[in-house]
Length: 241
Image 1: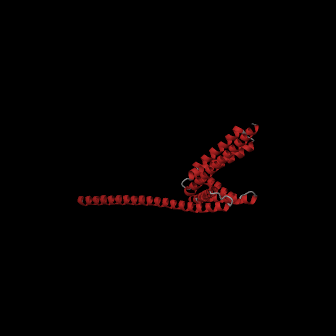
Image 2: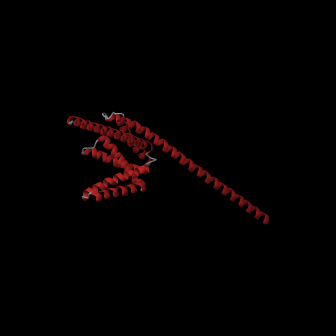
Image 3: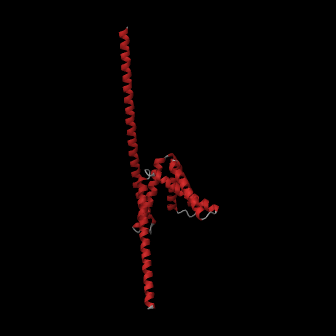
């Protein structure tokens, strides 16, 4: 009886372990699918989603600053969480409403993330290179917003999607495969974003051209009306004479 009970216990334990493993695999697969979808959306529509992305980046950076401040002040539990949430909300709101500031933070975070993925900054020199590269791109983004945002979101989203796809198809042993998939995805995403942006510019120029023509037409009509009134006034003066 004891042996039977022992076998049952072992069987139940192994069955539970297999269920937990299967659950973990399912959750991991779901996470990879979500990461691939989000990466693809950022890669293809980064410029259109820029306000949302800046708010998220601001919230993440703000939460990181909040964590550092809370640790430095020795806070715990509720006060620790309150400081982290406050940092995320304040910086996220600033990034959303102050457009250039938000773009600066977003590009800074995204470029640093890409550099960290490629360089693995576990030593001082790669870390300095990652920080300097991120700051340079962030400053350029404030000056040339649209092209830099397109390039950065296309590259970051493409690499994220590529690495997630590599995980889904089971080729994570060689990281370069994921990077290669990400590079191809990034090129496609950047090209699509530039095409959509050029179409938007073309539509804007057409609207401005139409408004300009309408303004010129109104001015010419006003000028014609003025000339007619002047002619009528001259005729009246001639008749009086």
